[in-house]
Length: 240
Image (cartoon, rainbow, N blue to C red; front, side, top):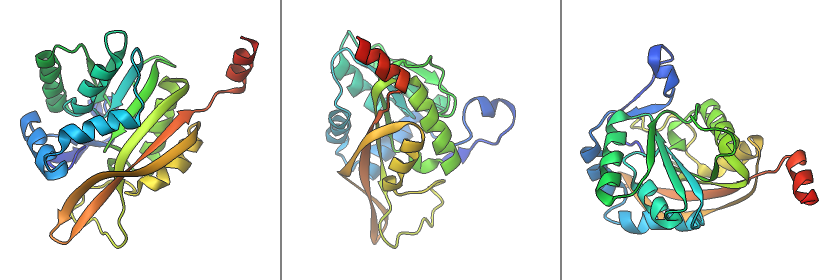
């Protein structure tokens, strides 16, 4: 979730290998402070467990947190999947990843945090049972959303799950602060997910409300989708 002190990578030099989207430049401690009170309003613990519940995380599963920030969700995911499971986190911000690594070390939880962007996930095909994306998509223009969703589909196992939690666009809201690079309404995501090979989408609201002005709040919602099986995968499953 990148709501402040951010900049956009330009398509040149080493930045291309990380991301062409938004990158947080704030220190991890400041990011956590702002998110905890400005975004979660002191309900961080409740909402991160809600995210794990929505993703239906099970012991032994392999989980990827895309745009993991300081690892808040990844820590809960690792607790849910246990010793038999694996959790990886990826983020383009070195500052936030350093904070995530400190948290994991303090909690004595083995989590693999890597520097990178959603459009180039450094993992083999069909590596994960679940991919999580919390408050990342609103920073991405539609072309980058498409690239990211295609990469997520690539690294997910057949029938793997993708959970996206992000803002919903309230009627009449205008982004006067320039915080959002892409389309704000999460309800538009299922169409892009279908293009990327996802099906069985389920959506709803979450209790999170974010004050963006003295008179207005942003609501949030979720979309849960499954990666569709290819005809070859379906045939192989029927034979087994």
